[in-house]
Image (cartoon, rainbow, N blue to C red; front, side):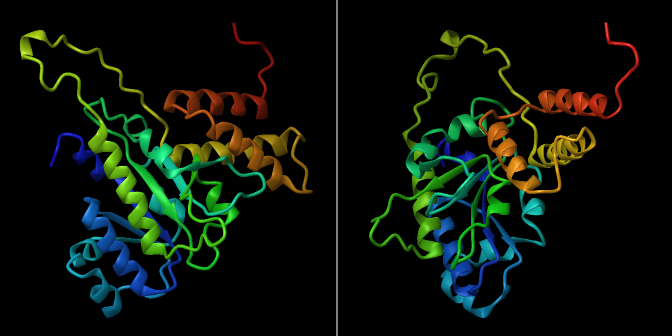
Amino acid sequence: MTPNLHLLNHCRIVLCQTSHPGNIGSTARAMKTMGFQNLYLVQPKIFPSPESNSLASGATDILEKATVCHTLEEALAGCTFVIGLSARRRQLSHALLPIREVAGRLPELLQAHTESPQNIAFVFGTEMSGLSNAELDLCQMVAMIPANPEYASLNLAAAVQIVCYELRMALLDQKDPLRDLPKSQISPQPDKTIHYASIDDIELMYEHLEQTLYSIGFLKAKEPGRIMQRLRRMFARSRLEKEEVNILRGIFKLMQSPRSNPID
């Protein structure tokens, strides 16, 4: 394994409510051919299954260690960035980016230059309808495969194969400018680690924000979800750090219970 490909271990492939067990097996095969190993399944209709094992074709080890979750939030626990895969534009959703463009940002999203890379997830929806709006709300970025617009229907496992290939190639194309230098010429690098907020922390922040907006009368019972969708999209454009989330929640807390004296 090249120095960069170990970063694939920090990527999750998440399948939501998969209907056909064969697609799970084919996904495992697609992942293993590209060096991925972390498969998460959210409420699969049938799993485990002999059909999954058969279509995995030698990648049953991926299936054996797959994590089955009740909710997408559970599958994303511990991740700091989530990319949803979608074939169509949605109202009030993020901009659709080609998967190759997203893959080019993979080292940045993983914090590849640090000793402790981040965990990120790529989320795929059901075979028939893709990701729901609620599932997309949990994503910070939405990627698409630029297929034939007259017939863009991709099999789930085929879509996973393309995404995994693009991610692998992006890491293989990354050059390490220090790799071929003598150690005497390499200066110590400052610690550039950024402590991004986990998806768990961000979801708690959104809950706190919604409670606060209700308490101050900004949110009304009529269509509160649309406003929260816009706020989610706004925050998603800025990858929040853990300290920033703590600052925002401190502000929300004070908005709910203002102090009588201003803070110096």
